[in-house]
Amino acid sequence: MATPQAQHKEPKGFKPFQATSESVHHPPWFNYGLAGFGVLCGIGANLWQVFTSVIAFFNMFVQGAVYKNMAPSSQGNATAGALAVSIGMSIAFQLGVMFFVFRVHQEFKEQKVKIGDNMQAVKSTAVQMIAHHRLLLAWSVISFAADTVGDFTFINLLSNDPLLQLGYTLSLYAVSTIILSASLERHWAANVALENWRAFKAYTKLMHLKVQAQHARQEGK
Image (cartoon, rainbow, N blue to C red):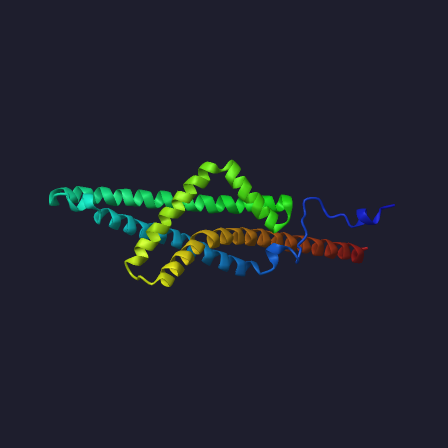
């Protein structure tokens, strides 16, 4: 005699659609749209931050005493070199910021799974980053400082309002790091939810066809 657990045993390899799953609180099309918009804004913010950092660093080069004391014939070659160095620095610093934020995000999720409590997970994440990722942490501090200098230098060319400068820098950092990371996660969750929904619909259709076939056999007897 089959036990109640055996009677309700799910088919092997099938995962039922769960309406309470975190990835399906919203329709997949909404998650796709929101995630896609966030990813585009995040990528755009990173490219913009590189662009503005190039302008800021290049401006610092040409305003320096060494460049100003050069002969006009030498300034042409120095300008190309300063631009190349500014581009390289901007890309390197931006990558440092992104790798740090994504590493912290991943480390926090791992610690949250192990510990559960948010505050304890934050403390454990900080300990893990300091203990096991010192080189990344050091480079990230330098990258954040350089990016901040670049952002403030660029916005200072347009405005000297402290509130506007702070708002510009914080919003740019938020979109280029946190929102980009969250949007990528939401896009992946939308993919999982959509595939889960398709599997549920396919399984439901298969069960419906089996019931129809069974009824047809019974009527043919």
